[in-house]
Length: 290
Ligand code: ASP
Image (cartoon, rainbow, N blue to C red):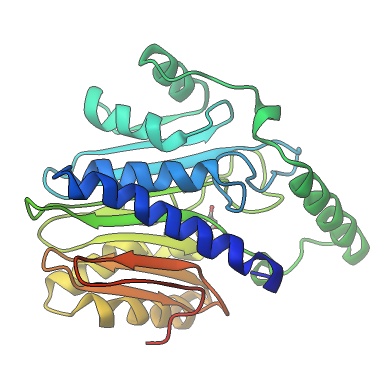
């Protein structure tokens, strides 16, 4: 995250917290709270989610999202959608109204449209900043004659975890994936247990970062399992980042929440925007010291 983007990120995560909190303070569910928080960040062009996402190799936006309910283990995911401003809304419809768990591409868009979610043009999701970013990246890759080293790519996936008055937890993650990805490539973000997971018996987790290493470790579930084995989220989050680095040389960030309200936030990148709010406290930052 470059210096000139820090304020926009802090504003973005703070707005997301406010949207989630509005749901929770009216005794709404954790599931509704994470959906609303993620919608705010999908609508915010600062992030790699919804409009303003990174472009794939063909210059198109392809989006992935997952939402999961810790109370019931119901989940809804979409992958490689190109005509939805808020893929998490479609994910939620799948969770609530479909016997299935995951839809991709055109089928996901048809499902969304049939359930009242308007489709948009792919161009509506593309902004000039990202056209320029892709152009620069591809020019550099040509110069180097190969794919650039993956850790040079920044990440801006969005995610939220929440705990409601009933004691239920939920998680949601939404992304445009990685810059210059091959069309059809799916990362960790929308895969159950990789980029997102929620189970009342363990934890709600959302991850960001280089998706391929995260997928190999099924990192969100790995972290939730650490919590159910008795480790606190505040320890499990940095442990997950160490594991990611040591085992597969991966990089990224993670947010973790359990039913007791313990919070874990960690990243092994220089920065990651984060925010949280409890009845007693609200904080946000772009570096989390553990
Ligand atoms: N994890 C995402 C992916 O690999 C990218 C990101 O976090 O920004 O698709």
